[in-house]
Image 1 (spheres, rainbow, N blue to C red):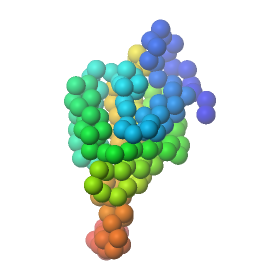
Image 2: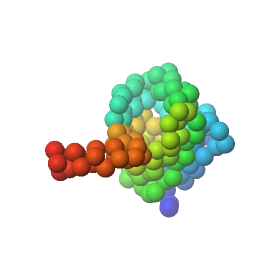
Image 3: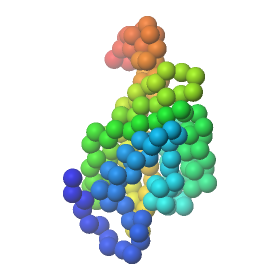
Length: 155
């Protein structure tokens, strides 16, 4: 996939489509614990992050979130299904396999929107996924009951 040139800067952390592909795959496919140290410089200090369970503002809280996830999980793997760029937004479709310390592995299917600022750093990240559905799908007998309930009530 070819990245569009936005603003050429001297910033070594100016995000491109190629860099997104490399970083997101590398973040989770390390041996042992996941590591975000190589990706954090691509985020702006004023990062705004939101997903299904939390809303975070600022690098200290964002970094703390990555540290919590590292402590909770035994292993994380990220498969990027599709990565696209439209102007200052990157769209990632992904499959994340997470192994918790005491529970079986779970596959989560989701998407992220990354918005970059004028410096080419991520100023906003919005993650979309069905946390409970993807986790419940991995629990024998419970997953089918949950999906049946959701279809009956909301489908």
